[in-house]
Length: 274
Ligand SMILES: Cc1cc2c(cc1C)N(C[C@H](O)[C@H](O)[C@H](O)COP(=O)(O)O)c1[nH]c(=O)[nH]c(=O)c1N2
Image (cartoon, rainbow, N blue to C red; front, side, top):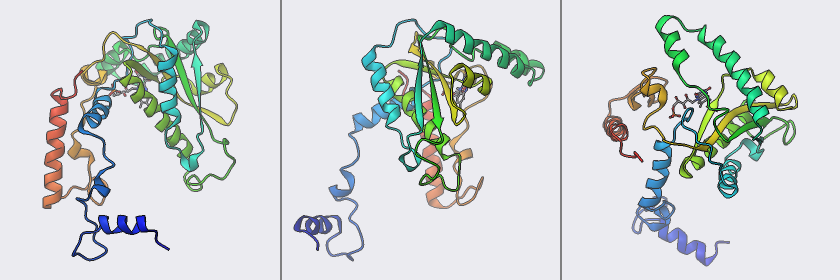
């Protein structure tokens, strides 16, 4: 049976004098869940000013309470079937960092040979890690057996545990940015050798090797964009309608694409620069 409170709620969220099934979207019952403008701005500021940091780390240690907030943000990420497949391995010892850096050096040389001519020279000049300069490295791993073999949501797409772990990486990255802590992801590494260094069991995958620390500066734009490696794609290239790579020209689509273009222009012009 419906309680009195439920009846009042149901009356409130439906437009008076309208069919019972038409919700009144202007009613506070629908809008109360959004954050204030200042709170939203803070979130978007975090998102648009987050950077992958390689060469601007300072040696200032990240205090325990800050690190604790950042790690907790990561742990509160969504995960398939709520399996929380991640571990956060904190790497503080120079010796371990040196071993991982050796892996990077080897893989980086191998990678350079995959590019040709001018691209190879540009690649060689890019700074692509801050393993030794950053005070803390964190490896975020994925344990596919965390909650047994059958996981809600992973029954048909096996990689869902890896995707979940990446959600934790992104939470960590954004929380760190809001704390003024830079994060750089290093994936130019031999994964099997990294597993050996960190003594990961067979079932555990190292998803992200991250370098963390306070920075002298956060760049405005991705370093690969500033170096002319690749541009930021226009939103219209990645927003499709009904089918992959398909656009539309009805009034809704046209207006949405125009708004997306304006938003992107103001971000590129530094709306969220800090
Ligand atoms: C899965 C994955 C793996 C890597 C990266 C990112 C992600 C998501 N990125 C960082 C990447 O280059 C960077 O995110 C883009 O260039 C965009 O720049 P911002 O992150 O916006 O600054 C990265 N950067 C780097 O210097 N060395 C690396 O090995 C990697 N690997």
